[in-house]
Length: 220
Image (cartoon, rainbow, N blue to C red; front, side):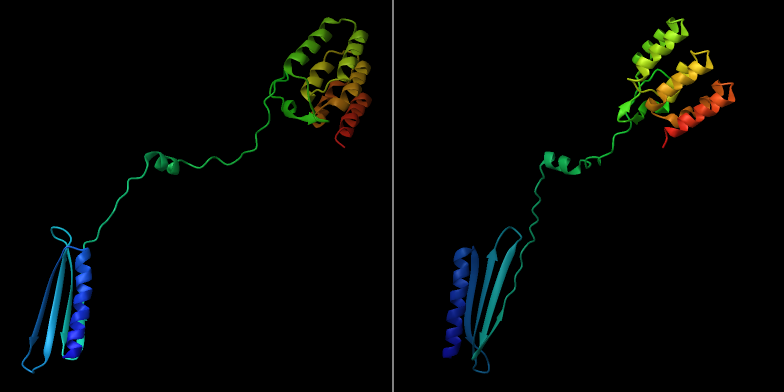
């Protein structure tokens, strides 16, 4: 009987402590059954809402105790609204990967000139305005010797493309003078391999072969 009372007291203290923290309903019954074994039954129900409740029950019989705890509680789902600016930033596409810039667009006064974006010794060929001005000066000079001297001064200080070289060579009628102009210009041609076909501008085979050898040497 003493053990029964002790279990009842401990259980009631536990249930009472819980009752102080919640709005509960607690019932405790002590009785003797047909076998003259005393027993106690404690039940507690906690009301949390209109349809929500949580409960616990303790049953003590004879010298032992059997505790059964039954809990019934609703599942609360909390939905937090995300900040619209944060969501928009998160869904934004990643920055594009780095791409190496393409060749710089340049106009050398010639159509579809691949040499215009090439360099030699770190320098580009003459741009369109420079080349057109130079070409115009050569055309207005009717003396071929003076024209050669003029071209020599410009070609020693400026770089040019194979296409620009071809237009300059067409201004010289004398094949020897034309070859001399090619020799002056060759070290400054940015794409000499594209100028090999100009060997047909010489009817003299010796001069033509010398020109090919001159341009081939620039590629080494």
